[in-house]
Length: 449
Image (cartoon, rainbow, N blue to C red; front, top):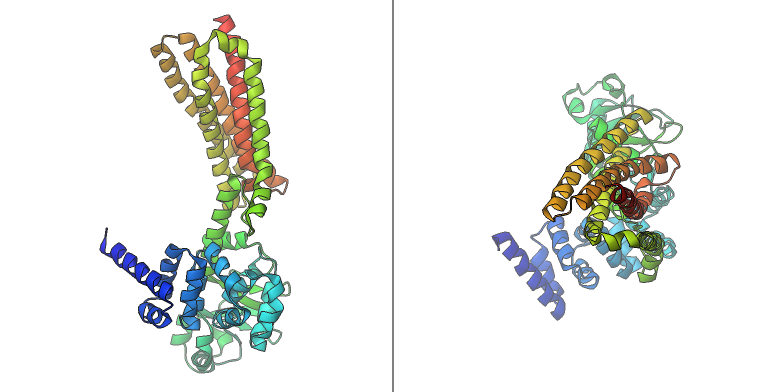
């Protein structure tokens, strides 16, 4: 074990002992030298909501609130469910508005009214506005804290404002310039502000804003925008161009991580929603039924070709391989297309090129694996079966790649999330089609050869 691992294990053991003995003072002494991200790492390893809640409540509210937001979402939500409204309100009051709104969204809506009453009036008003935005939009991840000043302010006045209010804003990259109605006119980078003459007007040194995020923009669009423009912060405006807040790169990275996780789950037919065991079963069962019916069809196909199998028993040896390779190629092609769709707003011509490339890849992989199967048939002393398996795998992998690459595009055009709809369909379809192709090719070719 490395030294760091030993230190972590030692701290975890101490935390467990302190928790069992109820020694809150000991916990405070143990974690006071650690940063919030280090504490969060330890709590993620513990993965016990009750113990983690107890440890957080031993800490200063500001540190505990920051640590809470750094935990894995599943653990954080489990802890939030156990916290009292009073404790939650104290944590929320210590957070920037975007994190505060995110934490409030993770609380049962029935508790919102009481928690908001416990918060300062101005913060409560901000949070009500933030949580009113749909969860998948830019408004849901923006922060209200933003430095905006009128263009007739001097550089000296702007710097004085920064000194006075800087602690209220997490990170300041630029000052936004607004008119009397609050409409965004431009911005002044901090480095430009610091080297400008004190008497200069902000309007004289302001630069035009290249990237503006509409408050109702989809958050996946925001991720793509930050990636393409290579920016760390962007203003958020309403339909009239009024400055509402800003989005920073840390929020975008969180969204990108969440969306990637959701896509992975959806690819295997699981919705990422909070709920108990019954809820999980209800969400997964429809796609398992799709697979259940598909495999029944596969069994029917085998039964229909039982006479062929009886005469050529060696055929059965290749069935798992045909189905597995076809399924893998299909899922690989689907993953490529889903990634392309998620990261771009390309036109149909670009999608067509990608589809054709995936089909060719499926065919080429089929030829390679088909050659190996033919050699395997020769090694086993049955060239006929080896040839049948080779032809079948070429056709099956080509069709699987075709289906895998086209289904995401079709579902996307229909307005259905391709990641959610594609996985279960491709898995089931490829099993049925791969087996059917194999049996049909076997019946035809073995009668000819």
